[in-house]
Amino acid sequence: MLLGLLAALGAAPAQGQPAVTIPRVRNLALVQTLHIGGVDRESVVSLSEVSAAGVKYRWSFIEVHAEGDTARDTHERFVSAADLDSSSRWHQVYQRDEPLEHPGYTAYTVGAALYDKLRATGSGAFSMMSADDESDASAFGLALGVGGVPPVIVRWRGTLTRVGSNDEPFPLLFNGRRIKVPALHLKADLTSRGKQWTPEIWILAQRDHPLILKLSDDKRVFQTVRADLIETTAQGAALDTGLAKECRIEAPGIYFEFNSALLAPASDNGLALLSDVLKRHGDWSVTIEGHTDSIGGARPNQTLSERRAEAVRARLVAAGIAAARLKAVGYGAARPRETNSTIEGRARNRRVELARNCS
Image (cartoon, rainbow, N blue to C red; front, side, top):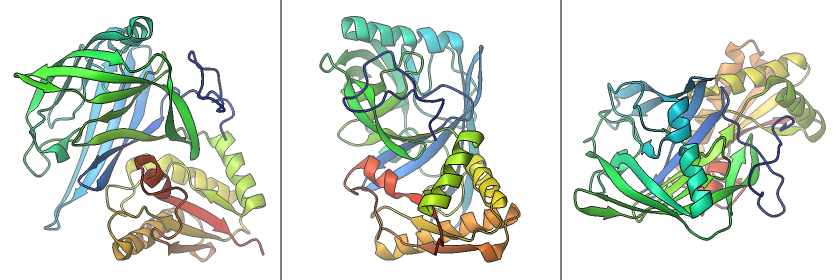
């Protein structure tokens, strides 16, 4: 599945793990989780354009409010090649009606020059646009002006300093596979309006894509938990093999809106891949299984898992797969792959699997 993506990093890989590059290429999808108040709120960001000029990121979302209203929106952000190379400033939040580009800022990475300085000297000047630490933390890193009171956005200035001299192994799901990537562990010392903020930050130890993996403070944890790159040839063959020999696969590139059975737009590539596999094997019938983490209670999770499995089934039927070949079931949190006590474990447990009757 990862053929063509396994390559040596500039930094040493985590002990016992193969070196895996997270490429900065078109259609790479990043799943990021904000954990706050006992809830993991996921968002999916895709690299919609990558060129010599820079990178355009795209984030679409749907929010279903308590009164039944549904808010839909799409945000895009362009970061120039110059800022990807030299910026030491991170614009961390989306705002309604904002410009496409914030010159002088990155969006999901640190600049290569800052990365080099952190490697060479252990510290560097850094600033970021983010929420005031007393604002409603539920809006941290999310689109603003879509329900609720938007937080006050301020610029935090200060330094980043490495914690230790060695890279740390950081857990990540890449194309559905649990790996550990090398990361720089940093301590930020930032001030704004007379206040101090000292979050810890982890960035991918990869100079050509120093992705921000995690930001943590005493109120919240903002973490990149998944990276997916749907490659039709390699992954289609892997799915064929998985269903033919093991009779089970985890569906790649399937994303749902927060606490919902609505499929995120970034799921289109993954659904097309599943459809192609099933069209090549017209004699196969499969069960689509929905799985959740343990947050939210057994009954709501059971219902959510059933609705998510049915949503995938409906999209495959719409793509031309005979309905009689597809069954949808939900297992809630009853079949975890990993512990539900960690952010990355819960992300691993929120999944869709396909099982073929091989008897």
